[in-house]
Length: 100
Image (cartoon, rainbow, N blue to C red; front, top):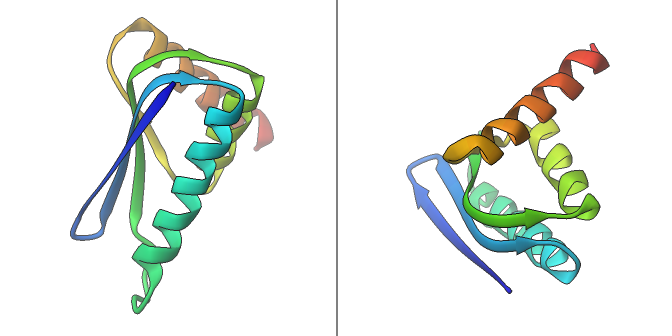
């Protein structure tokens, strides 16, 4: 099970994710992300600032990691609390540095 809340304040769009980021839940998050980006871009010239709040995510499978990498490459900031989130941020940053 997954819960995804979308909050937009001015040009900041935040997706708050809770539950397991695995299997069909990954597809649900990707769909929400794409819809949110399209909706926030309509009628605007600048891209909105995007962030993904993972503080309530309990597990992530390989597909979830792939989506987070894609979102990160597209400019989304990954945030949350605790050791697991720090590990995710470190992993995404390490991959970004290796690509340079």
